[in-house]
Image (cartoon, rainbow, N blue to C red; front, side):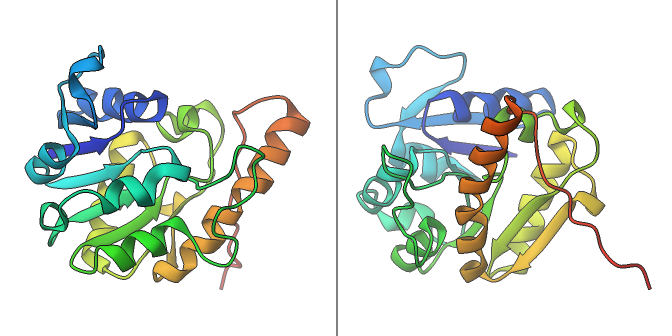
Length: 204
């Protein structure tokens, strides 16, 4: 599958490396592709989005909405966009405290299918969940098909179906994004990024 990852930073490269190992065709997107020296092909943002089967937004959260809004919306039409970013200020306040970046992206790209996922733990853990015991990863989005595609990519990273929790529509992304504050608190208290939560369901 052709995956277009918008962004060239640490998160983008971790995801690219993990998905390349299982056979996906990876392209990274940048505003200035000629200035990047990474281990993956780098194209412009619009070229990356247009050429991908699935698009992953790994742009720094505070710049995500503005950057994606500047790209021709036709590049996203009919496609799944997986938003893995968290929109926070330099002082770690939520930029959209009564909403979420994922909801904002869905608003500006009404003909695409935005799914929020992979934002509630460190990307080193998301791309290698075996670092700890069983834990949970989440999906938020309005399209069942787009969430199914996202779940498939999560399985490629090592997550199993019991660990993938569907939170509901795109409005549920605000809970997943607000959880960043709890994650940061846990990671600070435990002095490790190898920490996550596990949803425990009542049996019967």
